[in-house]
Image (cartoon, rainbow, N blue to C red; front, side):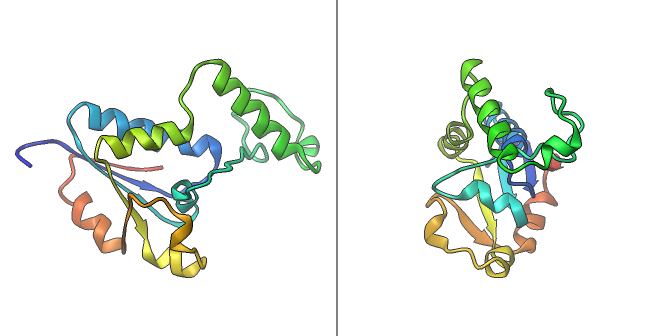
Length: 154
């Protein structure tokens, strides 16, 4: 591809709040004409599952807009409740879902690579992952990232 700028993103987190930045940045960069590759490793692989049920983790997240005492965050069901509240807020504000953002990336031909070592380590079943991905090791990421104009770790 001629002289397109390149963006490399390594995705290491798989919670609801950490799913938005990589997909927003990747889809925006692709819309601006960048060649984009996302490399999903460790907990980031959760974002490549066909059926997403992402949760928000309030514990240890002092930037949460809802102030919850630490003891309340440890109560059973609190994570599900906070996640449900956040999903409702996202929907009420007209913000795209993680699935919609991921689909935008696929449509924009963002290359998504799943870390083969992590798949093996955590016994992932490839049939649980979306079809539009590739599999590769760290060298796959470095091959692209080494030529990228921008590299991000999220």
